[in-house]
Length: 210
Image 1 (tube, rainbow, N blue to C red):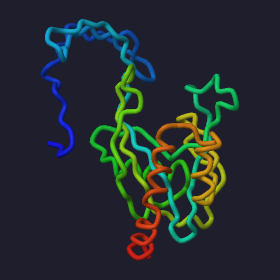
Image 2 (cartoon, rainbow, N blue to C red):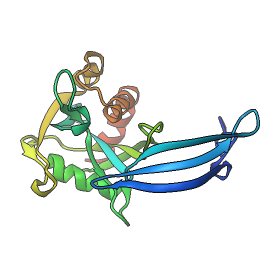
Image 3 (cartoon, rainbow, N blue to C red):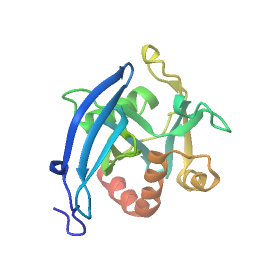
C-alpha cells in the first residue's frame, strides 16, 4: 500500500464479459467487452480494441567516469509518419521472455544492441506508456557501462535489427529533450531521472563499479 495514494477501485471492480483475439501476429490485438464501477455509483459499459504487448525493459546506458550516455538509433514502424524521420534516438530495450528476469533482459539487450557490458543496474520505475489502448508495462533502468570503444552498428539480423550506437555527453543528451531530438517516452523519462540523480549515481558507481 502506498503512503501517498490508493485507488478507490481495483481489478475486482472490473467484469470482463468477452475477451476476443482479433489479430494474433507479431503482437496481439484483442476486442474486450467489459463493465466497471463508476465513482458516483453504477457501472460503465464499454467495448474496446486492446493492443497487447509483453512486458519490456528499457535501459539508459550511462558512463559515470566520462559523464556520457549511450543512445541507439533505429527505424521504428510506430513513427513511420514522423515529420523528421522514422529513425529515432532511443534506449536499449527488449521484451521479457518467459521465465526471464528484467535484470537479465537489461544485460542481454545491452550486449545485443550496443555491445555494452552492464556493470551496475539502478531501477528507475515501472510504468505503462499508453494505457488508453495498449497493455504494456516497461521496467526502466539506468545501467553503468564503460563506454570506451563503444560504437558501430549492432542488432540481430534474424530479428530485423539494424542499430547504430551513439555516445553523447550527459548535458547534450538532456538538452536534446528540449530540442525534440529525443522524443520518445522511455528516453525522456530516463534522461530526466539522470538529470535529477546524476551526482548521486556518479558518486555511487564511481566507487562501487571500479
